[in-house]
Length: 239
Image (cartoon, rainbow, N blue to C red; front, side, top):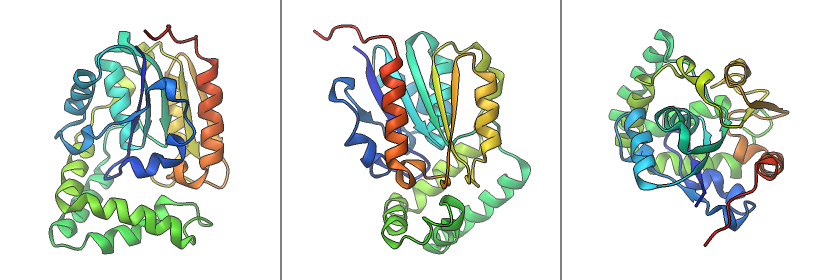
């Protein structure tokens, strides 16, 4: 039986997918995975996901979740019916980003996570949404709830991520690639690159949207996901 797996971003939870959980059809057996909280590497996260969810999968990953989705498809391409990749990158860590993450890890270890994350808000959201106190507080709440240990662990996993560009061209599953036009954390060029490498990709850019597309533009994200899912070959009858 096919199952739709939602993969959250770094230090994120099902909260970031709430608008999608409310909209996605029940027959897709939607599940939000938390493998990013339990494994130390992207490769191990993908392997664990495959072990916990047998059968055919549709993967929908945002940011770090998209990185895990690509690695999962690489490990078991025959099991992945389709993918949606939201605000993510296939590239390995750069030297500059490694230095920034190491500095942030030091601050997380010193108990200064709230300071770091509040400073990150203008990078995570489009300027208009960064001024929405309810939206921003929701984001800060679930990231801070992850705690310093998870912030450190997941950042280290991201720093050691594989270069997915090496294997994307071999993946044959239909893929929807979404990105906010104002995404500063995984800029649109990263999504354009992914779409150019995947043989069966559809690229969509979201206006007035930063990195947190599922929260910033939930109606548009939902519409695109539902349209894309509806265009996939019909699911096998469920017994």
